Amino acid sequence: MQLLRKILWPFSLLYGLGVLLRNLSYDLGWRSVKIFRTPTICVGNLSLGGTGKTPMIEWLIRHLSNYDQIAVLSRGYKRESSGFIVAGERSTALEVGDEPLQIHRKFPAVVVAVDGNRSRGMANLEGRYHPDIILLDDAFQHRKVKADFYILLTSFNKLYPTDKYIPAGTLRDAKNQANRANLIIVTKCPPDLDEASMKSIGKKLNPNKDQEVLFCSLSYSNRLMGADNELSLDELSDSMVTVVTGIASPEPLLEYLSEKGLETRHHRFRDHHHFTPAELTHLSNEKIVITTEKDYVRGLEELPQAFYLEVEHRFLADGKQRLLKGLTGLKC
Image (cartoon, rainbow, N blue to C red):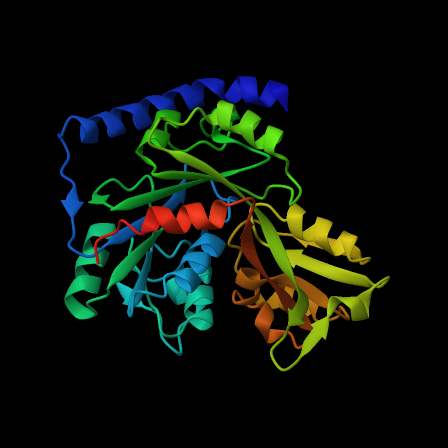
């Protein structure tokens, strides 16, 4: 692995140079930035996947009760469509992307739209749906649109200060861009993370004087959700189950299932993998298939023996109150 990183290092330098020049063009005003009238919260990261952006968008939806109409704008990664599309009752993951479809099904009253052109997407949302607030999903590096509030996520096990530019690492934006964030949230922390560890991580992140650093852990449900029924994980204790994932970081899920006393046989696919008919046929021979919510909407819902576990962020210490306090300054 170390040898491979050394080989890839020159390519990472070239990538980093491109990122530097791109950000500089915005900082110097060579590229225009669009500001919209609707209050906008941007949730993103500096690295490739695995920081829990979708659960954070869902957390915000649940807690922004003072807004009558919420909209979410995503690019709809790995969708086969193009342009501006709003998720509807008949939408599929191939049309709008797995994460937007997941959000739409969970929160049908929320307008969930996808558009690779964030500026066009924002204009369409304002012109057609007049939302009270817009949540920009995975848009920290998309500087053509200026948000009112930026939330930067970084994973506990892979903090961005220790990462390298792709392809030697997973860093896709410059580390100094963290200065644009209003809040930095360390996700996937151990639920018992102590104050000394939080302070140590805070020093590594080195926030500026106007930034706060918050911490949260992943909290999985004890209920397995299927197309027609539910199961309790307790019913499967000491059983062997098949786990199927197409996400960037399946380790927390596997650890949770192990803690619940389940033996697992893991089939791991690439992030955002769309399951083929042949793969579904192969998996149909399994007795119980456990997966994530966004894997479920990418085809596994066709298997009657497939179930997914919901997951949400659980803030540590007073993180929840501090985040909500930070959002109170948004214009309504």
